[in-house]
Length: 597
Image (cartoon, rainbow, N blue to C red; front, side):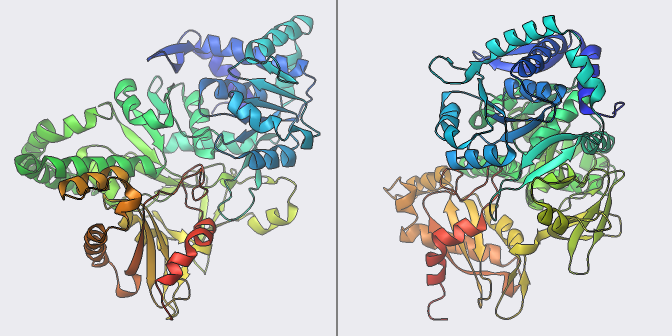
């Protein structure tokens, strides 16, 4: 990034971009282009509109919405105005929304629609700092202290006419050390903490990330991650600086279809999407059976050998090259077309990605570059490179980033991207960053001789059996989730003699299996207690256990007919399992597997 602040970067790219396309916005079954010039008009009017609402520099402005172009425009406008954006997940419940609005002392909140507005309206009486709401869509009539987006922009036009230099003066005031945003962590272990990051933090991380993973001007990204999550947010900042095109998915449920329609070159996602794609491909192969399955099995074997050569930075020549060309024409090209057919690479972050899935997709010709980071270090610590990657690791440190492994295995990070503080929590800040500037991540990992970082687990999640064995549950859970009949896996056994697990059934796959095996039930809740299903899953778990040391093996399990979800509280908005919630909710089932131990 040439600039020292994000507001200056946004203004410069808008000027450079002119009439070229910045966003592709889904409307009525197609994607309408929005140019840099149109973006510039919108964000200037919105920034001036917030000034007209009486906001002062440094005031907090929340955004409560799903991923859409208005979210990004509001974010840019807030930053241009010298205000502090506070993202809120649209899946958050009213009490969670209230907590963040109250704790951040937000003055204004942008809300997506009436559903989100109702969350705010129901708790507004408890929010003395909140003065106004701005609706992205829906009528503002009858909604107290609420305006819609066109009305805000109209106020902005009037404000700019009365004071044409207001925004320019604000731009000159903002410095790299100024606060940029306040992001609340998703809270897997307790109430969310507000992470304050500065302009300088994100200038560094955007610059460093683009050095590690080159993005070419005009390349298309499919943007669908929650923008309240730091990875989705960084994707937006990064694509703006690189002058790429962000195409918004119509909905999180339509991402698979939208991939084929938008045909992006690059995609950023959490592992869950890749896990589902992997499961769908394997299920389709099993369903086809016969000669089609035989051809696929041959092709994937060829693809895996090509992948191994590429990982060693060797060429796949001679007979292998001929086999690869045949596999590409018969199998791989057709599968990749379902993902748009133009992928250069995809990024995975936010949670561990199974190395089996990364290797499988690479064999198909889809390169997944896994990375690692935290909100507290502005999203990225390390990432695999397009020309330097190792599956099962999160890559090498970003340029300018230091990584150290503490004696107890905890990963420590230092660099210009480490956050300023937890908002209104000085003690928690001191616990997170030591006197030498090292951020204590809470993750356990190891680094190999080539500098590739491997994450083994969260420090607080490590299971210590009654026999004294230390076990990283995520490794076992990833193996279980690779099974096409398993949607989510939760491994349990701290201070116990052996490991047990909760397995949620993948509804489509288990129903299909039931049909094929003459079982009349179609309800996953009934199938979860069906003896035939339990027997089938026991055999599959035993097969997975053969890949593990005896103390890592899952000795007993419970099948659940309902999946973990955000709505029922087991998952964060980024689809991480809330371990404390799961233990509180299902601990009695797990404990029953130990008898009178």
